[in-house]
Length: 337
Ligand code: 13P
Ligand code: SF4
Image: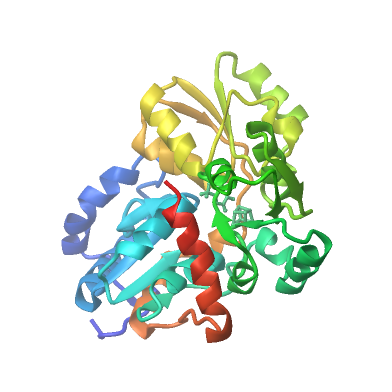
């Protein structure tokens, strides 16, 4: 086998079939036997290269099951990925997620090589606001602290007082001990936080292109067709959708809900790949998964992860003029207990 075989050149041999059998076992409920020979040699080579290069793969909960359950070393929501990125002693971090997540990992590991298998893996929330917008908001609301969702560029993080994720937004807002905050850029997450705190929330108008597509009518339809199912929803959904949910939380909190309560049926109102990941690990729960995929998350594929490890590209870099201030806003978030 050539040293730098491309994904398409890697053969599916009996040795690889045997070596990857335990990994197939993890995904057999969501990846078919027909697909596996296409994935297995790439997975095997990625896992070999990770050891050779002392690399770690961080994967967000929205990554496809054949990535999430077979090559990832750390999986989780944006908060867990940021926390784990801060702790790793690997030389190379491969972020299987979107660009802002890779930037956060780089901010916390300025001297490490951080790779993202596809630099075009963006986010509609990160696109919805610029650093200049934040500066204008500060002029308009002098003295009001700026809390920024991590789904933003490093340049925006550099203009903010503290970051948050959907998992810790309420805690972060309340940690400031002020009567009002600017909460940027997700309008729906801001609305949700406002329902959970007495702090006045001033919102921006960014939306997640995946979660904004859900409607209350859809949810009522799913509920009617799945009597007794529990509805779990991500706080990036519109308020009318959250009003139909039994539980609202970050991707990690929804996962915890399933693992702790073991409900027989769940309607999962978030990015669709997450249902596959939960289904693979929780065979006792049936999932109804309205299939809204995040086009950015799904840009990350096994062949691109392999190429990133082989070439150590594309590497994430951050303008030093913004990195220090952006890092401070992420570190302030991580310090909130
Ligand atoms: P979580 O922090 O809940 O994982 O959400 C990240 C995200 O991009 C949701 O769309
Ligand atoms: Fe951004 Fe929405 Fe995709 Fe999450 S699901 S990365 S918020 S576009």
